[in-house]
Each structure stands twice: as structure tokens, then as C-alpha cells.
Length: 284
Ligand code: NAD
Image (cartoon, rainbow, N blue to C red):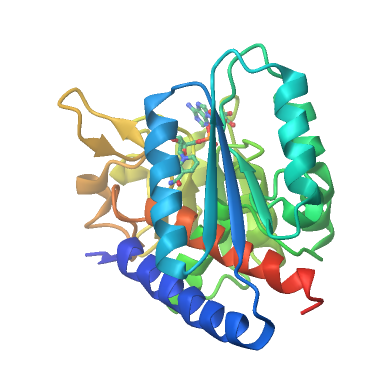
């Protein structure tokens, strides 16, 4: 039977470490880490995420500002706000909540954020740094998965790692981080042949697809570490992951639940990145 990796507890641990470090940083430098979050339009899920980010900032002792812009905001208006925040010394992190309304060009918007303030690590400069392995920020969700693995005492070195999903935000950077940790990494996607067979080779299996219970129990190697990034909604409104938890639990060695696994880690890592950005602004 698998050991459950408690993402809620590990995320709380990270947030309290960040809060502690923030206290010391404020005392020494008199600087409060500042995060500005921009949300355009009224997507309800995005509003929940933004509220949670704000709450986490308060708990860590950060200054946070939310810019809630109407869905009619133009590209020029959004870029002008980013330019202003880029110049503002009290703002160490800038985050544009995705997705943006269709008339706005996401790529140009992300390029506009100064890489030093890009706490989501979506700017091509930061993405490039991850490829090189010499980074200042890591994208929050894959970084959160790595922390779950590390803080559970699991070594990646030499292990067969399979990442299912190749998105820019999760799958690809996740594969790079496992590679940097000396795993032997395979990336699967929608055109992969024999997904089951490849998954069964995984000592560490990361599912980041967005398809409810795609990964069945018989696709898991006995004793494997299973990290479920997926967030899907069942008919009754409750959440579930990409892994059929009830089937995987008796087979896996470690497993993350949904909810309460990877989800809470994303915001915890955002807090860590914001503190890093504030420290970097002082050359630390
Ligand atoms: P995405 O839609 O951008 O990418 C999905 C990937 O899955 C694609 O690369 C696609 O090739 C692959 N795929 C689709 N069908 C497949 C199949 N049948 N077999 C194998 N691969 C298949 O999604 P994303 O942004 O990477 O997010 C993935 C999931 O993770 C979603 O459920 C999302 O909600 C969740 N997510 C969670 C967090 C978190 O904080 N926990 C953060 C980001 C995303």
C-alpha cells in the first residue's frame, strides 16, 4: 500500500519557512517582498486562485497588490500596467493570471515582464535558464512536484522517470527538472504509442494531462512514486486527478492525492520565488 504524500502539510512547512526568512530579510534590509497579481476578466476559477495567492502573501508577510482589470482591457493598457510595475522598486514579483481573454496576446504579455520579476518563470529567458540548468526561478508547479519528491526522502538519481503531458507550464519543465536531478526521463503525450507499457517502466510517474483517471492501477509499476498534477472535476463537482487513486493506491509506493497533493505546492513555490526575487534585488 502506498504512502500518501501530504502536499498540504509540505506546502504549509514551505510557507512557514518563507515567512521566517521574510522576517529576517525585513529586519536586515527593511524591505518587504512585494507581489503584484494582474487578473483580466471575470473567470471564476482565476478569481479563486488570485484570492488564494493574496492570502498566502499575507501569511508570508509580503505586500501584495491585485489589479483586477475588465475583460475589455486592451493590449496597450495591459502592457502599460506591466511597464509601470517593472519600474516600481517595491514590486519584486509580477504575475499575470492565465488564461487571458482571447483578444489579448499572451506571449507578448509574458515577454513584457522583466525576467527578474517573472516569479511564474514563464518568460522565455527564464525558460531558457531552466534548459541550461542555471536558473533563478523555477515554474511553480513542477518545482512543487520536485519538493514533494525531495521532502519525502525519495532520490531521483538513476531512476526511470515518466512524465505524461508535454505542456510548457508543467510537462516539459517537469521533465527538465527530473533530468537535472539525474533521472532517466521519458515524456509521453497524446500521440504516444503504448502509454501503459511506458508508464509501467516508471519508478517515478508524473501525470500532467487533465484527463480524469487516465492512469489506471495496471499502468503502475509496483512500488512506484506517483505524482498526480491533474485537476479534473467529477459529475458531483468534487475534484479528482489524472490517476485512478483507488486502483493506484495498493500498487504504488508513494502517491499524491487530489486534492491535497500538488495543488497546495504551486502557491507555496510562488511565495518562495517572490522572496527569491526580493533577495536578488539586493544582490543576495
Ligand atoms: P495541457 O492541456 O496544456 O497539456 C496536457 C498534455 O497532456 C498535452 O501535452 C497532451 O499532449 C497530453 N495528453 C493529452 N491527452 C493525452 C493522452 N491521452 N495520453 C497522454 N498524454 C495526453 O495541460 P497542463 O496545463 O499541462 O495541465 C495538465 C493538468 O494539470 C490539468 O488537469 C491542469 O488543471 C493541472 N494543473 C494543475 C496545477 C496544480 O497546481 N496542481 C497546475 C497546472 C496544471
